[in-house]
Every structure is written in C-alpha cells, then in structure tokens.
Length: 181
Image 1 (spheres, rainbow, N blue to C red):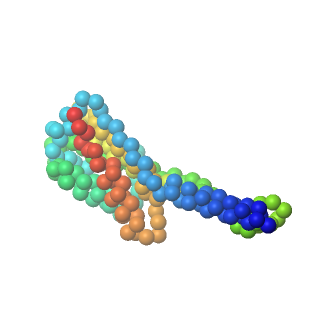
Image 2 (tube, one colour):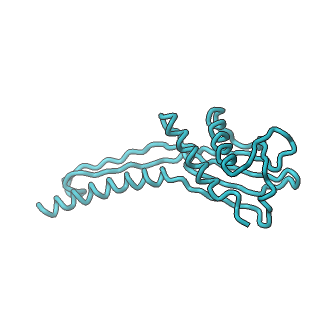
Image 3 (cartoon, rainbow, N blue to C red):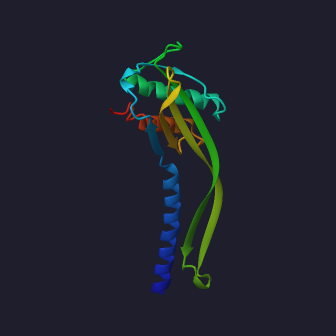
C-alpha cells in the first residue's frame, strides 16, 4: 500500500511538474540583440519610424503599443522622435506569430500500473509571438542594430496583460542600447 501511495504521489508530482514546466517555458521571454561592429552609436540622437517592406504586421492597436513602448525607452536614453527625413536613425519593427501545440498532462491516484490511477493529457494550440526591432543608418542604408524578443506577442484575454508583456519585452530588449563602444 505504501508503494502505491508513493507511486501515486510521484505520478502526480511528475504530471504537475510537466504542467508547470510547460507554463514556465512558454512565459519566459527570450531576448537577443546584435549590432554592426565599429558603429558609432553616439552619433544617433534622432530617429524616425519606417515601415519594413514585406514584414508581417500585427493589428494596429498592438503595433501602436509596440511603438509607444519603444518611444518611451528611446526617450529615456535621450533620443528624440521626428518625422523628418533628416533623422539620424530609422526604426522599424517586424513581427512573427506562429502556432505551436502545447501538451498538458497530469496523473493522480495509485500510479500508472494495474489501473490504479487516472491520467489525462490534453493539447492546446498556443501562439508564439516574436517582435523584431531594427535600427538603420539612413546615410549608409545599413542595418546597425537588431533586437528580437520571443514569446512577446502571445495574446491573452486580458488587454492589460498583453500591454504589460510588450512593455516588459521592449524594456529588456533596449536595456543595453546603445551598445557600449
């Protein structure tokens, strides 16, 4: 009887661990940045928003939330947004939304052997959203900095949660911008 109880507890713990692991993995944002070596980022003081041709776009509300979050971060770094073509830097965003299957499994009861317990596994489709932020030098027409935040545009039913996720990702993304020489 003790062995069955331990097996059941172990099965339950294992199942709950899977669920927590799946939830934790999906909620963590991954941030990656890269920049052109030798770029003098101290010369960039103004920026202008540009559209990136053929880039997948999110709905206009989310796009504006992303731009507002980037504007806030860049302003905190002393940069000024302008609509003039004479801006020191151009900024564009790209997004990607993909679907992925997520499995949730749990077990309870006396374990997996001899019908002594119950187990259940369900699958659901989740959205994996990636935000890319690109900074271009208009004089050289070259990409000088790129940042990418995955698991950022995963829609939830709560609009405030979505906005918080975007703001958090952009803050992490631009934390080390501009790169130190």
